[in-house]
Image (tube, rainbow, N blue to C red; front, side):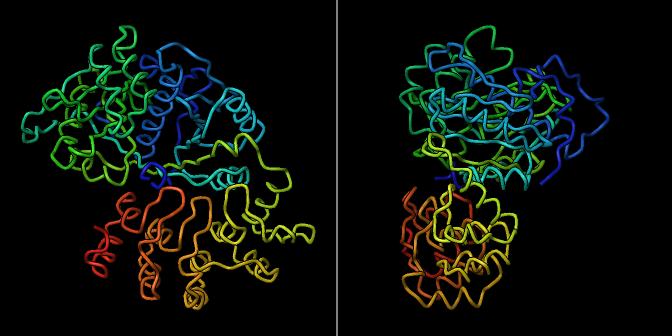
Length: 459
């Protein structure tokens, strides 16, 4: 659930980097370190984090589960790769909306057997958001880019009983593949990263660390060295601990070990993108926020059956605040290619006048969309209808409570609970109730409100 539910800063400098297979990813040797007495700006740190992410997805995506090379698609500054059974598209930042190149990348992934596609951008861009949403993409998580100066001392943490953190060896692969409960440990991810860390010509750039208690592998982390506008950076990826062993300090031990490995590899900075759950740990380890990115999720069924030009055009009209042509009025009741109702889509882009047009056409209103537009009185009036209060809509089948938690909107949350909304209602996609969504999104304020009103409800 947390992978899909995570939710600006301008980025400069990436276009000056060397191009590798169409991605804006410099090799380590292509970028020299900036002078040691000059501190990089926040924008440069964000560029460094995103550049490492670009390079890592390209490097890992160039291998199949057996470590054999496979094709990477690139058109201009847009790249596409297969990542296991799924696909990824990495967009340049600062972005330029190139619809034909993006459609070409999606076509390439479709013809190469990709499943769901994750589309990455280093910062935020409204034009891209509108265009991708019209093509059926859903809003994904919001990467929190973080950066740490590796010249700062890595402070040792109190030891964890019976824990060993060490580099992976070739002999570890069978045990790693079996530990499927460790987050990010899909078969392809484990095999591809293990291959990169244990084949000699990759070892300069990729290391994998494992955490063991006894003969059990309970966590892993990847360290990836790449060049950036601020010098060599060590990107930290897939840092995760088995659910049964979490909250014991193992994540902190893995983070500290990864930082020391980055120093040994010659990096000046460490970068990563954090989940809401990991942010506290990384801040305690010396990481600072560098900015927030944007992702979109394109389901496999939408990749296989792209929306019609008419449907995509209608979605663009709604998000752009245009007057809805009479010829499109029949679409007011349809579900858009991205799974949203027209009303919810217009509300997400704050198109108040479009919402008025849709309501005049007789479209079905919903509580969350009205609240999102600031029509709180109208939303509260709708809350008097029990059917509307817990109605599940949209691509994930979410009730208004789920969206209140996702938006971190405590006002909407408390209004819904006061009206009698059921916090046990589960969304149709992830089967998460209100407590599950709050935990997955790191929304501690929502957890507090829920637990105050329902002391035993989330157990």
